[in-house]
Image (tube, rainbow, N blue to C red; front, side, top):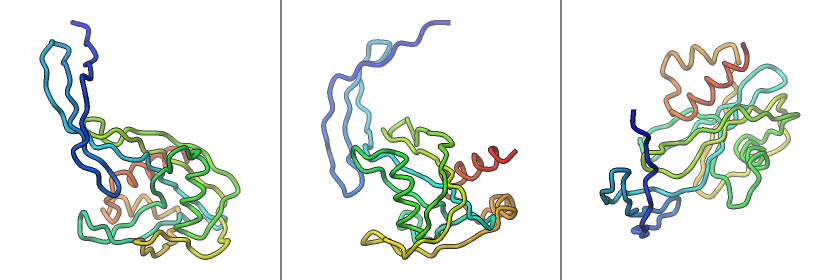
Length: 180
């Protein structure tokens, strides 16, 4: 078996700058010596927080998503600000989107969102013993409904297809695997 050779980046040109991502044409020299251009979406890293309450519920957020023109059930989460500590970002997103704070928080895993054409990662956390501490602090275009789901019902929700956001499914499966 031949050894794979890392492709060499020859250059990158920003083609589009949007509100939440930029698109770059990246010129590369392949391991076989050929040159090609790939599109790469660059965006912030993301946080997803599985939040369990003192009364054995998981906090979910229901919100409209324009990409699928539908309402989705998700774990609290969002973008990590440049230079922001990941743990602090997880606590911030939990507080902003649910009005809850946690007694302790544990990192579950980090995944590459889609390394074929995206540069970012998603960091999954488990916030334990969450209690309500105040009002939601939503961003300008966030409209969220907080839903408390019994932990015992989360597997059925996943099996039924009521939760379809791929990163949220990952977060909840990681949480379930930590329960065993």
